[in-house]
Amino acid sequence: MTSINEYLTSQNVSPSLIAAVQEFRQTYAVDPALAERVACPETPFYGTDTLEMALAAILQGQNLLLVGGKATGKNVLCETLSWVFGRPSFDISFHVNTDAASLIGTDTFRNNQVELRKGPIYQCAEWGGFGVLDEINMAKNDAVSVLHATLDHRRRIDVPGYSRIQLHPATRFIGTMNQGYAGTRELNEALVSRFLVVDMPPLDKPTLKMLLAKYFPDMREAALEQFAGLFMDLQRKADNGEISTKPLDLRGMIAGIRTIKSGLAPAKAIRLGVLNKTFDAFEKELLEDVAKTRIPESWTAEDVFEA
Image 1 (spheres, one colour):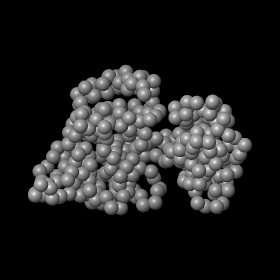
Image 2 (tube, rainbow, N blue to C red):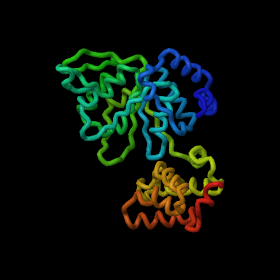
Image 3 (cartoon, one colour):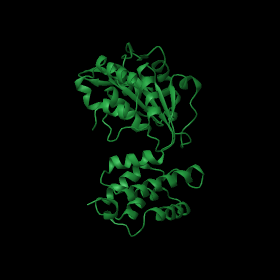
Image 4 (tube, rainbow, N blue to C red):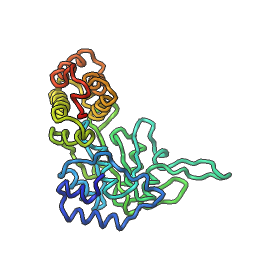
C-alpha cells in the first residue's frame, strides 16, 4: 500500500490540500483503541476532481452526500477518506427497522444498573469518527429527525434521559444514496441542505482498467481490455434502458475473476459473478450474447493470467 502523501500526489491533488490533510491528521490523532476502525482500502478511490471536492469539504467541517449509480465508487471513496484523514469509520446502514434508538443508543441493564448502550451515531460523535450513512434515502422520519441537529451548525445530540453531547471537532458524516432503488424516497430539503453534494461520475474505461490492474496485476493486457470492455458494454446498455442495472456489478465481476484463479473457465466465472445477477430469462439471454463477444467459451485461466 502506498503512503497517503504518495497516493494524493499521484492523484494530482493540489499541494495546499495535501498540506491541510497533514495538519488535520496531526491535530486529531486517532485513539489507539479505535485504530482498527480506520479503513484501509484494498484499492483507493481514483478521480482527482471528486477527491479534491470531498477533501475540501471535510477540511472545512462539512458533511458529504455522495449521489450516483452503481459502480461509481461511493463506498470506496468513504473508505479512502477514512484512511486519508486517519479517522475511525462507523457504518450506519439505513433500512425499514432503523430508528432513533438504534442510531443514538438504548437503555440496557448492566452491573445492576441501567446504562446507555451507545449507538453508532453517539460513538461517532464521541470519538471524532467518520459516520457513513449508507443508503440514507431509505431512512424513516424518526431516524432522519435524529440527524437534523447532528448535521447542522449546532453539532450536538440530545440523548433522551441523558445529557446532551457535542460532536467531536473531527466528526464528519458521509451519506450515500442510489436513486431509484426499491424502498428509497426523495430526501427533504432540510436534510439535503445539511450536506455538500458530490455527484459521482460514472466509471470510464481507463479508470476501470486501472482498477482491474490493481486487483489483478498478473492479468494479461488482452484479457484486461475484454473484461473492461464487457463492463462498459453493460453500462451502456443499462444507460439506454436495454437491460436493468442488476448485472452492472463491479464487485461481482471482481469476485468472478477471482474464481478463475481457482481453475474455473472465464466464461463460467463471468456467468457466476455478473450474468446470473438478473433472474429475467430474456435479459439473461441478452447478457449471454454480449458476454460471448468479449469472453470466448474457449478461454482458460492461462488466457487471463500470466503464468
